[in-house]
Image 1: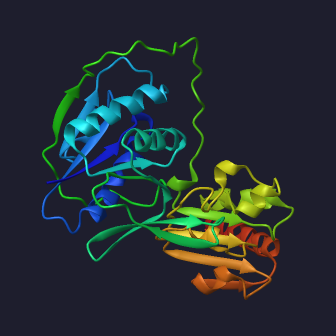
Image 2 (image 1 turned 180 degrees about the horizontal axis):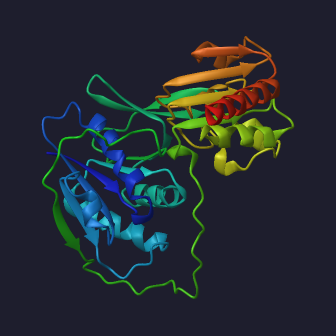
Amino acid sequence: MYKIMIYLENDYIDECLDLIGAANINSSKKQECEIYGVGLNINKEKCKDKLDYLISINDEILEYDIMSISNCIKDITKKYEFDAILINANDTGRMIAPRIAMALKTGIVADVTELEIENDELIMIRPAFDGKIMAGITCEKGKVIISSIRPGIFKSSDLNLKNTKTINYSSEKKETQKLKLISSTKKSQSEDIRESEFLISFGGGVKSDFEKIYKLASLCGAKVSASRRAVDNRYAKRSIQVGQSGKVVSPKVYIALGIYGAIQHIEGLKDVDTIISVNIDSKSAICSLSDIVVHGDAIEFVEKLTQKIIDENHLDNNR
Protein backbone atom coordinates (compact mmCIF):
# COMPACT_ATOMS: atom_id res chain seq x y z
CA MET A 1 0.00 0.00 0.00
CA TYR A 2 1.40 3.38 -1.05
CA LYS A 3 0.69 6.04 1.59
CA ILE A 4 0.72 9.80 1.03
CA MET A 5 0.42 12.40 3.80
CA ILE A 6 -0.89 15.94 3.29
CA TYR A 7 -0.26 18.53 6.00
CA LEU A 8 -3.45 20.45 6.82
CA GLU A 9 -3.96 23.92 8.29
CA ASN A 10 -7.42 25.10 9.35
CA ASP A 11 -6.78 28.64 8.11
CA TYR A 12 -5.83 27.36 4.64
CA ILE A 13 -7.82 24.14 4.55
CA ASP A 14 -9.05 24.51 0.93
CA GLU A 15 -5.51 25.15 -0.36
CA CYS A 16 -4.24 22.16 1.60
CA LEU A 17 -6.97 19.87 0.28
CA ASP A 18 -6.04 20.93 -3.26
CA LEU A 19 -2.87 18.91 -2.68
CA ILE A 20 -5.05 15.82 -3.17
CA GLY A 21 -4.69 16.61 -6.87
CA ALA A 22 -0.91 16.37 -6.50
CA ALA A 23 -1.26 13.18 -4.46
CA ASN A 24 -3.30 11.58 -7.24
CA ILE A 25 -0.55 12.31 -9.79
CA ASN A 26 2.03 10.93 -7.37
CA SER A 27 0.10 7.67 -6.97
CA SER A 28 -1.18 7.34 -10.55
CA LYS A 29 1.09 4.36 -11.27
CA LYS A 30 0.45 2.66 -7.92
CA GLN A 31 -2.02 -0.20 -7.66
CA GLU A 32 -3.26 0.84 -4.23
CA CYS A 33 -2.92 4.16 -2.45
CA GLU A 34 -4.19 5.81 0.72
CA ILE A 35 -4.21 9.57 1.31
CA TYR A 36 -3.87 10.83 4.87
CA GLY A 37 -4.49 14.36 6.08
CA VAL A 38 -2.61 15.42 9.22
CA GLY A 39 -3.05 18.62 11.21
CA LEU A 40 -3.85 20.28 14.52
CA ASN A 41 -7.50 19.95 15.59
CA ILE A 42 -8.66 19.99 11.96
CA ASN A 43 -12.22 20.83 10.92
CA LYS A 44 -13.52 17.34 10.14
CA GLU A 45 -16.49 18.49 8.04
CA LYS A 46 -14.18 20.24 5.54
CA CYS A 47 -12.27 17.00 4.96
CA LYS A 48 -15.27 14.70 4.81
CA ASP A 49 -15.36 12.40 1.75
CA LYS A 50 -12.02 13.75 0.43
CA LEU A 51 -9.39 11.78 2.35
CA ASP A 52 -8.98 8.13 3.23
CA TYR A 53 -7.86 9.05 6.73
CA LEU A 54 -7.83 12.27 8.75
CA ILE A 55 -5.33 12.28 11.61
CA SER A 56 -6.25 15.10 13.97
CA ILE A 57 -3.48 15.96 16.45
CA ASN A 58 -5.08 16.66 19.81
CA ASP A 59 -1.95 17.75 21.69
CA GLU A 60 -1.98 21.21 23.23
CA ILE A 61 0.37 22.64 20.60
CA LEU A 62 0.14 26.24 19.45
CA GLU A 63 -0.40 26.53 15.68
CA TYR A 64 2.82 28.53 15.30
CA ASP A 65 4.98 26.19 17.39
CA ILE A 66 6.78 24.88 14.33
CA MET A 67 9.28 22.71 16.23
CA SER A 68 6.60 20.81 18.17
CA ILE A 69 4.43 20.37 15.06
CA SER A 70 7.41 19.03 13.10
CA ASN A 71 8.31 16.56 15.86
CA CYS A 72 4.73 15.35 15.98
CA ILE A 73 4.54 14.83 12.21
CA LYS A 74 7.89 13.00 12.33
CA ASP A 75 6.50 10.55 14.92
CA ILE A 76 3.26 10.08 12.94
CA THR A 77 5.25 9.42 9.75
CA LYS A 78 7.33 6.74 11.47
CA LYS A 79 4.20 5.13 12.92
CA TYR A 80 2.18 5.06 9.69
CA GLU A 81 5.17 4.67 7.32
CA PHE A 82 4.22 7.28 4.73
CA ASP A 83 5.91 7.03 1.35
CA ALA A 84 5.39 10.71 0.48
CA ILE A 85 4.64 13.95 2.34
CA LEU A 86 3.10 16.95 0.57
CA ILE A 87 3.05 20.38 2.21
CA ASN A 88 1.86 23.76 0.95
CA ALA A 89 4.74 26.11 0.22
CA ASN A 90 3.36 28.90 2.39
CA ASP A 91 5.10 30.55 5.36
CA THR A 92 4.32 27.69 7.74
CA GLY A 93 4.99 24.93 5.22
CA ARG A 94 8.41 26.34 4.30
CA MET A 95 9.44 26.02 7.95
CA ILE A 96 7.91 22.61 8.64
CA ALA A 97 9.01 20.73 5.50
CA PRO A 98 12.82 21.03 5.95
CA ARG A 99 12.58 20.13 9.64
CA ILE A 100 10.69 16.94 8.83
CA ALA A 101 13.17 16.10 6.07
CA MET A 102 16.10 16.48 8.47
CA ALA A 103 14.38 14.34 11.11
CA LEU A 104 13.66 11.58 8.58
CA LYS A 105 17.13 11.86 6.99
CA THR A 106 15.77 12.47 3.52
CA GLY A 107 15.79 15.30 1.01
CA ILE A 108 13.19 17.89 0.14
CA VAL A 109 12.12 19.46 -3.14
CA ALA A 110 10.85 22.97 -2.37
CA ASP A 111 8.43 25.19 -4.32
CA VAL A 112 7.30 22.48 -6.73
CA THR A 113 5.23 23.83 -9.63
CA GLU A 114 4.56 20.60 -11.55
CA LEU A 115 4.61 16.82 -11.11
CA GLU A 116 5.23 14.23 -13.82
CA ILE A 117 5.51 10.44 -13.91
CA GLU A 118 8.22 9.02 -16.16
CA ASN A 119 9.10 5.32 -16.22
CA ASP A 120 7.02 4.87 -13.04
CA GLU A 121 9.20 7.46 -11.28
CA LEU A 122 7.93 10.73 -9.82
CA ILE A 123 9.61 13.85 -11.21
CA MET A 124 9.15 17.02 -9.19
CA ILE A 125 9.63 20.17 -11.26
CA ARG A 126 10.65 23.51 -9.76
CA PRO A 127 12.29 26.76 -10.95
CA ALA A 128 16.06 27.03 -10.60
CA PHE A 129 18.70 29.70 -11.17
CA ASP A 130 16.28 32.52 -10.37
CA GLY A 131 13.63 31.02 -12.62
CA LYS A 132 15.83 30.86 -15.72
CA ILE A 133 15.37 27.10 -16.01
CA MET A 134 12.93 24.47 -14.75
CA ALA A 135 14.63 21.57 -12.97
CA GLY A 136 13.21 18.04 -12.78
CA ILE A 137 14.20 16.31 -9.54
CA THR A 138 13.73 12.70 -8.42
CA CYS A 139 14.04 11.16 -4.98
CA GLU A 140 16.38 8.34 -3.99
CA LYS A 141 14.51 5.03 -3.92
CA GLY A 142 13.59 3.87 -0.45
CA LYS A 143 13.48 7.40 0.95
CA VAL A 144 10.36 9.29 1.98
CA ILE A 145 9.47 11.84 -0.71
CA ILE A 146 8.97 15.30 0.80
CA SER A 147 7.93 18.27 -1.30
CA SER A 148 6.48 21.70 -0.65
CA ILE A 149 4.10 22.69 -3.44
CA ARG A 150 3.13 26.15 -4.56
CA PRO A 151 -0.51 26.94 -3.65
CA GLY A 152 -2.93 27.14 -6.56
CA ILE A 153 -1.05 24.69 -8.79
CA PHE A 154 -3.30 21.66 -8.24
CA LYS A 155 -7.04 21.33 -7.65
CA SER A 156 -9.03 18.77 -5.68
CA SER A 157 -12.30 19.22 -7.60
CA ASP A 158 -14.07 16.35 -9.40
CA LEU A 159 -12.50 13.69 -7.21
CA ASN A 160 -14.04 10.37 -6.23
CA LEU A 161 -15.80 10.52 -2.88
CA LYS A 162 -14.07 8.64 -0.06
CA ASN A 163 -15.27 7.23 3.24
CA THR A 164 -13.03 9.36 5.44
CA LYS A 165 -11.98 7.72 8.70
CA THR A 166 -10.91 9.99 11.56
CA ILE A 167 -8.00 9.13 13.86
CA ASN A 168 -7.48 11.22 16.99
CA TYR A 169 -3.76 11.30 17.69
CA SER A 170 -1.94 12.17 20.90
CA SER A 171 1.82 12.00 21.33
CA GLU A 172 3.11 9.18 23.52
CA LYS A 173 5.76 11.52 24.89
CA LYS A 174 4.18 14.73 26.10
CA GLU A 175 6.52 17.68 25.61
CA THR A 176 6.42 20.74 27.81
CA GLN A 177 5.04 23.67 25.78
CA LYS A 178 8.03 25.91 25.13
CA LEU A 179 6.06 28.80 23.69
CA LYS A 180 3.55 30.93 25.53
CA LEU A 181 0.82 33.03 23.95
CA ILE A 182 1.02 36.54 25.39
CA SER A 183 -1.38 38.33 23.05
CA SER A 184 -2.86 37.99 19.58
CA THR A 185 -4.29 40.29 16.93
CA LYS A 186 -6.68 39.05 14.27
CA LYS A 187 -5.22 39.64 10.84
CA SER A 188 -7.51 41.66 8.60
CA GLN A 189 -8.87 39.71 5.65
CA SER A 190 -7.77 41.06 2.28
CA GLU A 191 -9.02 40.09 -1.14
CA ASP A 192 -6.98 37.34 -2.72
CA ILE A 193 -6.25 37.60 -6.43
CA ARG A 194 -6.28 33.79 -6.63
CA GLU A 195 -10.03 33.85 -6.05
CA SER A 196 -10.78 36.20 -8.96
CA GLU A 197 -12.12 34.98 -12.30
CA PHE A 198 -11.13 38.26 -13.98
CA LEU A 199 -7.72 39.86 -13.47
CA ILE A 200 -6.29 43.05 -14.95
CA SER A 201 -2.55 42.86 -14.46
CA PHE A 202 0.11 45.48 -15.15
CA GLY A 203 3.86 45.23 -15.55
CA GLY A 204 6.97 47.35 -15.79
CA GLY A 205 5.71 48.91 -19.01
CA VAL A 206 3.12 50.85 -16.97
CA LYS A 207 4.78 53.57 -14.91
CA SER A 208 1.89 55.91 -14.03
CA ASP A 209 -1.89 56.41 -14.10
CA PHE A 210 -2.44 53.32 -11.95
CA GLU A 211 -5.73 54.73 -10.64
CA LYS A 212 -7.13 54.35 -14.17
CA ILE A 213 -6.42 50.61 -14.03
CA TYR A 214 -8.24 50.28 -10.70
CA LYS A 215 -11.18 52.25 -12.10
CA LEU A 216 -11.43 49.90 -15.08
CA ALA A 217 -11.20 46.87 -12.79
CA SER A 218 -14.04 48.26 -10.67
CA LEU A 219 -16.24 48.75 -13.75
CA CYS A 220 -15.48 45.22 -14.98
CA GLY A 221 -15.85 43.47 -11.63
CA ALA A 222 -12.19 42.47 -11.84
CA LYS A 223 -9.25 42.55 -9.45
CA VAL A 224 -5.89 44.18 -10.13
CA SER A 225 -2.65 42.19 -10.10
CA ALA A 226 0.93 42.95 -11.14
CA SER A 227 4.17 41.44 -12.40
CA ARG A 228 7.34 41.16 -10.33
CA ARG A 229 8.92 44.08 -12.16
CA ALA A 230 6.01 46.34 -11.18
CA VAL A 231 6.36 45.18 -7.57
CA ASP A 232 10.14 45.67 -7.55
CA ASN A 233 9.60 49.20 -8.88
CA ARG A 234 7.19 49.74 -5.96
CA TYR A 235 4.24 50.35 -8.25
CA ALA A 236 2.28 47.54 -6.55
CA LYS A 237 2.21 45.50 -3.34
CA ARG A 238 3.72 42.03 -3.28
CA SER A 239 0.36 40.59 -2.18
CA ILE A 240 -0.97 41.08 -5.73
CA GLN A 241 2.09 39.78 -7.56
CA VAL A 242 1.61 37.02 -10.14
CA GLY A 243 4.49 34.66 -10.87
CA GLN A 244 6.99 32.24 -9.38
CA SER A 245 7.82 34.52 -6.46
CA GLY A 246 4.19 35.70 -6.24
CA LYS A 247 0.92 33.84 -6.61
CA VAL A 248 -0.37 31.27 -9.08
CA VAL A 249 -3.69 32.39 -10.55
CA SER A 250 -6.34 30.68 -12.70
CA PRO A 251 -8.79 33.37 -13.86
CA LYS A 252 -11.14 32.97 -16.79
CA VAL A 253 -9.88 36.28 -18.24
CA TYR A 254 -6.40 37.75 -17.76
CA ILE A 255 -5.58 41.16 -19.26
CA ALA A 256 -1.82 41.81 -19.30
CA LEU A 257 -0.95 45.50 -19.54
CA GLY A 258 2.66 46.30 -20.40
CA ILE A 259 3.89 42.86 -19.30
CA TYR A 260 6.78 41.28 -21.19
CA GLY A 261 6.00 37.75 -20.03
CA ALA A 262 9.23 36.25 -18.71
CA ILE A 263 9.07 32.59 -17.67
CA GLN A 264 8.86 33.67 -14.01
CA HIS A 265 5.57 35.44 -14.76
CA ILE A 266 4.15 32.77 -17.08
CA GLU A 267 4.67 30.15 -14.37
CA GLY A 268 2.13 32.07 -12.31
CA LEU A 269 -0.63 31.53 -14.90
CA LYS A 270 -2.40 28.19 -14.59
CA ASP A 271 -5.33 27.09 -16.77
CA VAL A 272 -6.31 30.63 -17.81
CA ASP A 273 -9.18 30.54 -20.31
CA THR A 274 -8.40 33.80 -22.15
CA ILE A 275 -5.27 35.96 -22.11
CA ILE A 276 -5.44 39.45 -23.61
CA SER A 277 -2.11 41.26 -24.01
CA VAL A 278 -1.71 45.00 -24.51
CA ASN A 279 1.84 46.02 -25.37
CA ILE A 280 3.73 48.43 -27.59
CA ASP A 281 6.08 45.53 -28.34
CA SER A 282 4.09 42.93 -30.24
CA LYS A 283 7.07 40.55 -29.96
CA SER A 284 6.86 40.36 -26.17
CA ALA A 285 6.95 36.77 -24.93
CA ILE A 286 3.44 36.86 -23.48
CA CYS A 287 1.98 37.82 -26.87
CA SER A 288 2.78 34.38 -28.26
CA LEU A 289 0.65 32.84 -25.52
CA SER A 290 -2.23 35.29 -25.78
CA ASP A 291 -5.61 34.71 -27.37
CA ILE A 292 -5.88 38.42 -28.24
CA VAL A 293 -2.98 40.84 -28.74
CA VAL A 294 -3.55 44.60 -28.75
CA HIS A 295 -0.58 46.46 -30.21
CA GLY A 296 -0.48 49.84 -28.50
CA ASP A 297 -0.11 51.83 -25.30
CA ALA A 298 -1.57 50.10 -22.23
CA ILE A 299 -2.97 53.21 -20.54
CA GLU A 300 -4.53 54.44 -23.79
CA PHE A 301 -6.22 51.04 -24.06
CA VAL A 302 -7.45 51.34 -20.46
CA GLU A 303 -8.86 54.82 -21.09
CA LYS A 304 -10.72 53.79 -24.24
CA LEU A 305 -12.12 50.61 -22.73
CA THR A 306 -13.22 52.50 -19.62
CA GLN A 307 -15.01 55.10 -21.72
CA LYS A 308 -16.61 52.38 -23.83
CA ILE A 309 -18.03 50.68 -20.74
CA ILE A 310 -19.30 53.99 -19.32
CA ASP A 311 -21.00 54.83 -22.62
CA GLU A 312 -22.61 51.38 -22.83
CA ASN A 313 -23.88 51.64 -19.25
CA HIS A 314 -25.30 55.09 -19.99
CA LEU A 315 -27.16 53.77 -23.02
CA ASP A 316 -28.56 50.84 -21.03
CA ASN A 317 -29.82 53.18 -18.31
CA ASN A 318 -31.63 55.35 -20.86
CA ARG A 319 -33.38 52.48 -22.63
